[in-house]
Amino acid sequence: MYKALLFTASLLVSGVAVANDSACQFDIKFSSLPKVNSQTVNASPTVKVDIKQYLATKVVKRTKIASNVVCQHLTGHAYTGSEQEWAGFIDNGIKGLLQSGVTDVQFTKVGTNEAVYNGELANIEYIFTGDNGGNKQVIHNLALLDKKNNQVITISVSGNERVSDEIKSEYTKLVNSFSL
Image 1 (tube, rainbow, N blue to C red):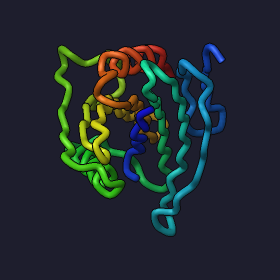
Image 2 (image 1 turned 90 degrees about the vertical axis):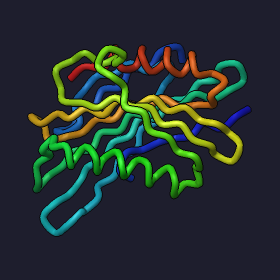
Image 3 (image 1 turned 30 degrees about the vertical axis):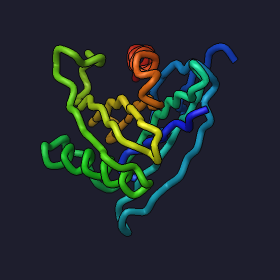
Image 4 (image 1 turned 180 degrees about the horizontal axis):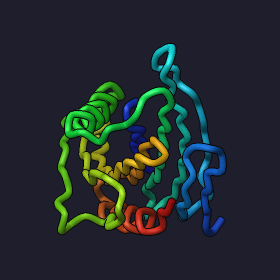
C-alpha cells in the first residue's frame, strides 16, 4: 500500500465536520470520519494563529487517499489577500514539501475555467506533484481566504499518481460540500 503525502499549508460511511468554536466555522463533508487536531501558534507577542486540522483517509485500489482540511485563524493581524501574501503562502507550501523529503516538486495554478470552486471567497486553486521516495504524489489544493473571519481554509486531497482520477474526484466532492 502506498503512503499518502499529507500537506499542511505554511507549515463509517460518511463524515461531516463542523467547526463550532469562535473561529473556523464551516461545514464540509468527508468520505470517512476525520481525525481532528488543534493548536495555537504564537507568531509574535501580539499575533497568534489558531490552527484546526481535519484529516480523513480512505483506500482506493490498495492506495491511500488523504483528505486534509486546515483552517488558520489569525488574531492580532489581518490577512490582506495581496498577491505577495498568496505568493508567500504557496512558497511556504513548497518549502514544507521539500523539508519533508519530497523531491521534484512541481506547482501548477489551476485556471479559472478548470477550477472546481465557484464560490465568492478569494481563493487560489493549485496542484502540487512530487516524488516522496519513489512514491509519486498528486495533491489537489484549494486555499480560501475568509476575510470576514480573518482565516484561511485549505482543502487538499493527495495520493499516489496511479489513482489521480480518484484523487480529483474526492477533491471535487470535498470542495463542493464546503460552506461557511
